[in-house]
Image (cartoon, rainbow, N blue to C red):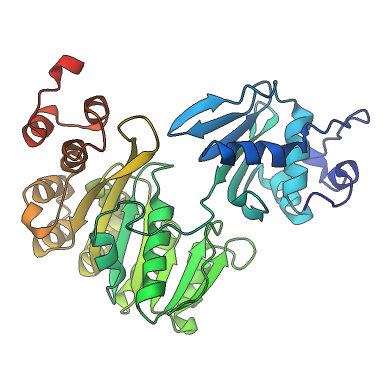
Length: 389
């Protein structure tokens, strides 16, 4: 990958709006650079690497950003050269036109990467997510057993929700991995970009990437039924067209796995409904209620001892009570149903955090920092947290 044409020549192919020229004197090997940086980030078990002009490289380790002191301030030329070495001419042209670029790639000794280039204050910033070399398992990530149960469902909709960096796509990859090793299915994934590459085991897995294999989530979903799928993974329900198409696929008797950016399970439902115009929201609620299997709201929190992170998971299952509230648009009542349905396997985020604390997996400070209802958490955990305020 790094033995291609000299980056000065390649950069000249960029369209005029961003036709930066790497200065003639630029022959540093600093971005020996990007590969060296990525190897260091991997060695330190970082999840992300950030390159911004005027700042040293920063890596997110155990959820916190840390400066890589071995390197000085990043120059504009450093980041430009790094981007040139990691992208194709078509991707460079796309970035020049759209000022944004998402792409995935794999590097020897580093593994798969999910990358984003953007503009900030007229310069390029670069964020790189380092993905595990192997697809994690549900047990390996210490996720609840419900992830395995949901992966074996034959039809319906499962939404994994959470903020950016909460492990949603990794969790869905573990579910696809579980399907692959435990049932015979044709799985079609539609991703932006592909993060984990699956090798067929019991299932046949077709992986499609936006930009190279299909134009959009919605376009791929319109044609996916002709590919004889059993399971469809949709990277994200980010717009009306995608949400409607995903519901249609779920309505036709397929298992659909997708993600959403929301802080909790009820909020994820509200966000999906909110993608539809007001005149269509009641019908959207009916369609959601008919297809919903579960919403898994998750966030990553620091482990006790400060080494690594673990997922706290809110579980909302598509019971009759949940479906009725979704159908009627009474989203604000869903939290109480989750809170009082532990015998059915539902768990609020606070309950999940409290259980992690009781198991010794997180400490009291983390429990207090991430919980919403201190009194409820104290009751479950059997301890007082007020002294930590």
